[in-house]
Length: 108
Image (cartoon, rainbow, N blue to C red):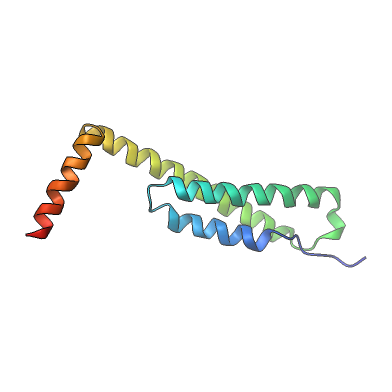
């Protein structure tokens, strides 16, 4: 029997790498994208467990899984860090006031 490749590995790797870039937008988008990649990986992992001899790219699955876990952790940590900073400033209203002041200074 010829070995096949697991179907969602390439997509999962791309999503996991994309999650690192999206972590810069508040953390949560990156964590969501990495979560989608992790879900795809789990589905492929179930397929591999059912028939290990039928698939050839299990090492890529492990790599994608590590990338997705790192993306989830970085996204959640960045989100918590951003939320903590807003809390330390004095809440959302104080944060928006500070953004307004900085915008006015930049415009001058």
